[in-house]
Image 1: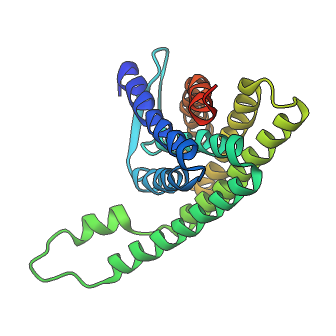
Image 2: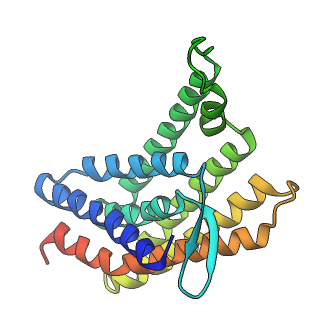
Length: 229
């Protein structure tokens, strides 16, 4: 993926948050933001099956395709935190976690169903949607820790700064949380499997931080949509 295509992807995905923020302001409800958050989390988990090359201009890194979409979930937690508070953010994270468990269960069932004799794609289906327990549980552990960490830190920065310096609470909650997610997931999922852990950690974190930095101005735009100022 070229650098310009990567930027286009990030900007395109980020734009969905603006619709959620408009809905939150119009109806004073977090419904659409939560729906987008759950969708992003689930789509990222499916896209993670494919390992992609990300050209950042100065270097090319490798990581799951879902890293672009998943990185946007931290922007959504910050938007909900800004508008509705930390309690609503934790509720949203819990909803997304239960949704992940349900999706994995249904995928597992789909793989276990015996295929029709004329359907010849069982092996391909199992490769894409089959469940690797170690990777699945590593993903869940990283998700719960990093997303809740982001919610706590964002709310803490907002309190100690009196609601000022939006860029600070957005960056200093999301960027460490993105790193924490990688530091938990990669070792739990791949330690001892013969894969180069450090390059995977550097690659995923680099792409995630690029998304996080690009989303700082998007946080300001979303706040303007949320509050009209």
